[in-house]
Each structure stands twice: as C-alpha cells, then as structure tokens.
Length: 86
Image 1 (cartoon, helix red, strand yellow):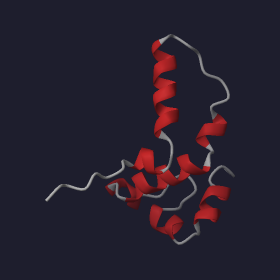
Image 2: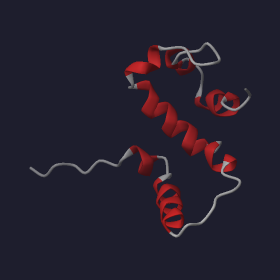
Image 3: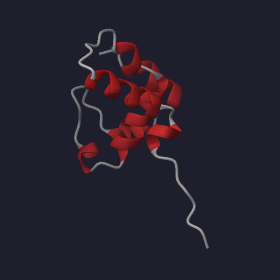
C-alpha cells in the first residue's frame, strides 16, 4: 500500500511559492519593502493560526490577552479581519 502524499501546510495555504521566492531573492542580496501585504494575507494568517494552535505555547496569552483557544472560537473571516487591528 502506497503512503498518501500529504501537502505541507505552506502548500495548502498557497504560501510556499512566496516563501521560496523571498528566500531566492534574499540569497541574491535583495532588500525587501512592503512585506506587510504578504504578512496580512489571508493565506499567511490561516497558516499561522494552523501552526500556532498545535504549539504548547498557544495556551499563553498574547499581547491582546487572547489565547489560540479564544481565537479558535472566531470564524476564519473574523480571524483574518481582526488580526492586524492592534
């Protein structure tokens, strides 16, 4: 029986291309500006949420006094829209 190939989380949220591109550009000594759009992108926020929720440190409150459990009760749209209010 063949093992089913799983997508990495980066690929699932279509972020791997961006990460590879940034890495390649940095290897050429390029400077980066306006990265905030990428950081605020729907895919990046979803990826961060997915990666953080399994982390044992996710039980610790952030600067907004919320834990990942508090955030998990929000809809995906709410998480994406409120992530950069602070």
